[in-house]
Length: 260
Image (cartoon, helix red, strand yellow):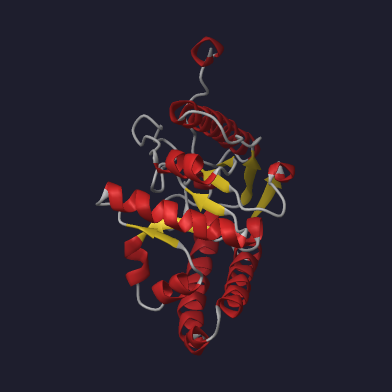
């Protein structure tokens, strides 16, 4: 059944994406608010496919930790394409720090540029940091949330932060913008893993954690982010496995003495 649902979902998902990219071409002449509206319409259609074909839904926890009426930074775990398709459900009008190459994708890249994202050159560290800082100041003036994936790429369920360490760009943004950072843990990879054909049924959990307020040193910020996100993500993956035994088995939870 998972195979059949995944097959049907993938056909509709990629078909919908192609059709909408082409149908929305004239909209590239319009201003960003119109593109934002079309983006929300697209991700709403994708959510419909996920829920009613793949039988995959989601739950949000800790939304009370999101600051109101101001820009802030969200440091999110990145396990799947699933969370990128939920950013406008989670935040309304977010921007995202992403690799510059995505702007070169046919049609899709033009829509990303129109949404005013923060593209970075991952091959040049200094240039990437400058792009992050400039983009963060721009978003702060617009009072838009900024989503950044500290590990820089999608990370599989079995991959630890030791293998894919957290990068320091977020600490630079934190120090230079005087904005709080809200950690976001999730378990999306349990259902929609990287480059996988299969979309497994169940309920994804997004959990916001208490924000890290401005004023901490770089090393303390990075350690707090990594510790909180990794610990909660591990707990959420085990929660998913308990609720849906057919899912992949995540790494074992650390023993109390290891956490201490």
